[in-house]
Image 1 (cartoon, protein in one colour):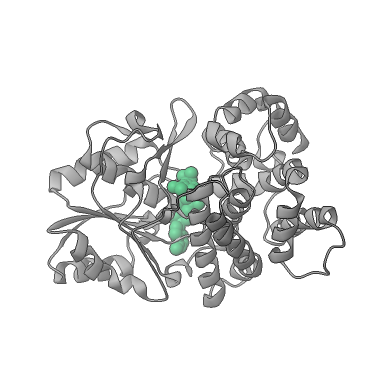
Image 2: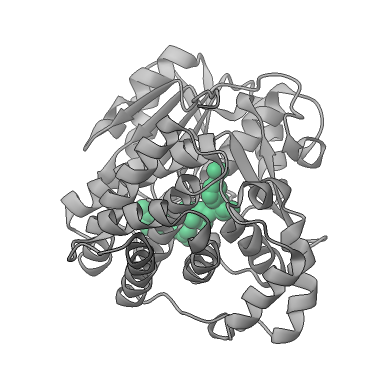
Length: 384
Ligand code: NAD
């Protein structure tokens, strides 16, 4: 067995109503001014007024920051970091989808280090810790609350890149499924498929390890059972709870085993055509799984058996094929489009997208089947 390490948040707290613990936790890690990076969806919400009151009662001074772009550009984090410095903040709380959490992680790093986002994009380029963070996800998708990554889209260069550093792990990941009840069906579907993609890619990654396997498989089972229910009936708290747990476990798998070619191929769709991250992954997933199937059929068969109940497959190959059929069936049931043409991506963009995807080096290295620029271009072409 290869040696491995396993990381996540310093503490993970999960459960209905646990957001009420935020003031007590904030007091543990912060003093005085606290920057609360809030998803704009919650700007006028009761949650915001309650937090404002409860943080003040806990002796803290909340500074709210909600200028967060979807699929954020470096500017979101840089503006937030200036505010945090100006107000002398000692802690960053991030509440929202992956865009808000990545902004919180990025600005916390910039508040404690010199420089700007582009100085730190890549692996291990952050020199030291930033402000401590408490992250509260409100989508069940990215797993950003437990990963060492913050992703930014540079709209000038039309490229996407992540800051990847152990200093991005939060002090606390606080997960309250009740905060996800307001997610509309389409966002539930796309972010949920993002989480499924993390779990399936981590389980089939060259960097998978025994612990990442455990959490990835549990995530596949939870999401397989809950995603359609959560999309069809958003008020189903049990389905929401299982989706949030699934996306947390998938995030832990992603942080420790990495992702593969789906993510590499999704980045140009986001950077060049503003396709939301979850949607891009969801459309690509079955095609890349099919490309990779022969490299580890036993892993595909195991995921297939967990995704949904069905008669046991008689061979590994059948089990692996069944896995991909189940992903396609789930995607269709929740309204995910199947073609790049459905996303209005012109075929003539493929010669630009394929080399851009190949440049996303670590997911390409992690792919269980070696993949070339020609393979990527051929996969994109299949999606018309
Ligand atoms: P998002 O954060 O952009 O949110 C999508 C939409 O849902 C937004 O309009 C938001 O305001 C809204 N929203 C959020 N919570 C809501 C709620 N409870 N009710 C109603 N509406 C709500 O989408 P996302 O998929 O969560 O995050 C995408 C970003 O995360 C991308 O930039 C992607 O690259 C990044 N990402 C990061 C990691 C990581 O490890 N850091 C992993 C995967 C993706």
